[in-house]
Image 1: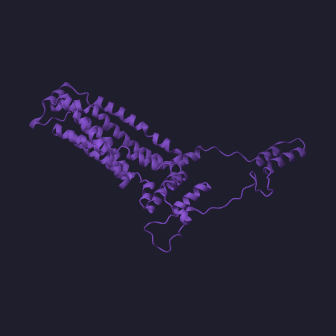
Image 2: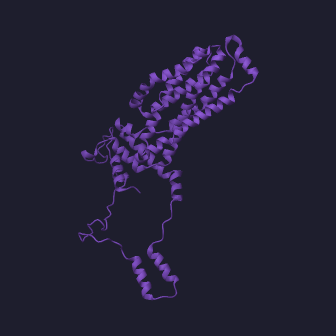
Image 3: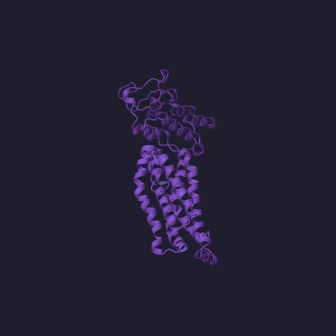
Length: 353
């Protein structure tokens, strides 16, 4: 159940008039001081929704993006020397692969920030992962060293959108757990680094015959399918997997409200609430919740029924002390003090708006 403040904020979000709604039969317009669409309103609604299954799957999808980004970054430690030797390029010149990737990332990073503000955090995240997928897969078939440099620069363009999923996750998380939620994906970068080293150790452990074919090249001046190409292909698979999973992530409700898309923002908030309250984690919390203790009156009655001896006056005193109301004295005499009984005020359900 929601508290009074959280339910009031949720009702305030649900009652916001849509920008495109002009029907006279719609819900009554709230007062002017309740018509603001500030980020604080969304944060309060997210606090009322809380963390649950929705955030678990969102963190999982964004963690795949971080793993893919880590793999593509750490791949630059193995790709230049191997690809340079395959194309017969000097080791110093082979370092141009990493320089092109990081240089493109530095140039296009501000562009992804503007894209996230103009078109949405989700759109910018999907654009970044798609660019990384295309550049990584195309690098496996690069016919020349120059083409490989250009394709890795394209991967660097996708890497420049690295902060977009963090912005999306921050705006989908409640303020009370925002720091923990963002830091929960930190393991993904370390996992991607370890996975890159493991894949490089497995794929690049080739025989002497493969090394001779790598140095000799194939027909027509094109290199044969050598280990570095297989390494690039294998390390591109997590990127493709992330590109398939990330479309399931929803857009930020804060961004939607800031751009006047109130109906979409309300649908996102309702979807988050329904997933959190109907997901597996919600039912797991119910199973793990401690059971309530028996009331004091039931305990006293059990003692009376179980005791066959003793004074009846003592038993009556025990039952009265267990069932007597425990109210602290008040100053006003009418329950208006600090310890007096509080009146329950019913609230309307959010669907009533």
